Length: 251
Image 1 (cartoon, one colour):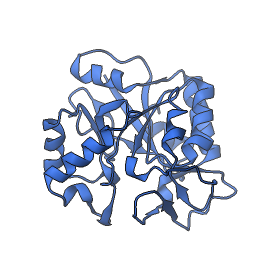
Image 2: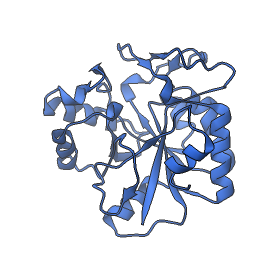
Image 3: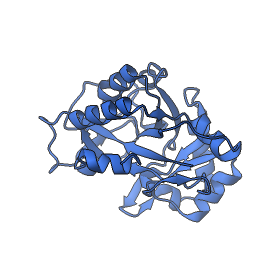
Image 4: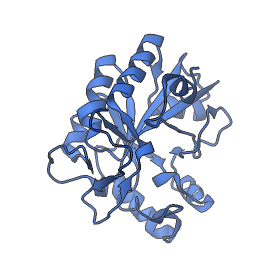
């Protein structure tokens, strides 16, 4: 038995999405970066994908079901899939939430708590703007939230993230700050920023009693997959339905 995890970041209507221009992020933390086009998907494609999962009768997993699969030797429901979203940009509220709610789907969002803006901001399709804590709480009927660091979702180049350069004590402290936010219900679950990590980061999570951690490595999650090295398949804007079915493990 196995399951696939799919990953989304940003959603835009096709009419306003320009894949030739990366999207600058707008977050509370004093950090500048851009979100590349492959981490976007069009609203129209997202609607089609979710409609397909609904019509197929897919079961959208909770993190408890995933934990029970690995630690309690429980089976997963038929046609199970785990839906995940990283960083909590405005599209989570504007586009993903109403569609998932309509279909009765469950999803996981990994929050960078130091990025959440203190006040709501006007939606701007040419920027990737983080939501507020209040926005996330209002969507708890669809989303459960997990740790994506507090201030450690930063990078100095395309291959090195902050968790790879800081002392372990600093990483541990940052994890605790993120987990101190009450709306994070899954305090034993983590997603590696940018999908970048070293073995020492994995072992630190193990020592800190994390049960699940998600990479950006592609593939399916088998029974013998290390639950701190779970795989996720990014769904890019270029994916047609055939590609989506393959990445979702339902081809």
